[in-house]
Amino acid sequence: MSEEIANVTIQNITTTGDHLAYYTIAMAAVHNVLAEKVKVYNKAVYLLSFNTFSAKNVYKDCEVFTDSALDQHSRTLQSFI
Image (cartoon, rainbow, N blue to C red):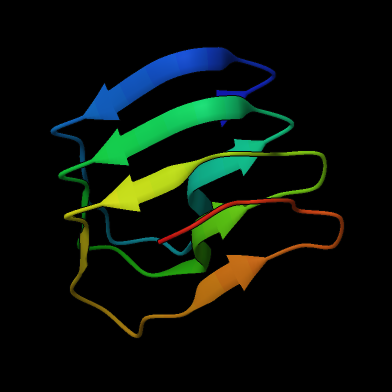
């Protein structure tokens, strides 16, 4: 959902679907991103993800209603849930 952005808030997003997704929210090479009130209902390989070269990102008040796992790729700095 996000790649190579900075200083952005993503909020009130709901993901659904019958097919397996690869990502729902992927913070990939992003900085200072807030993902707030995200609801994940579909299955995905990577549900809430902090990806390589991302820094200072936050997932706040997010809910995962399927098998949950936090994906943190290598070289992720200062990202929090």
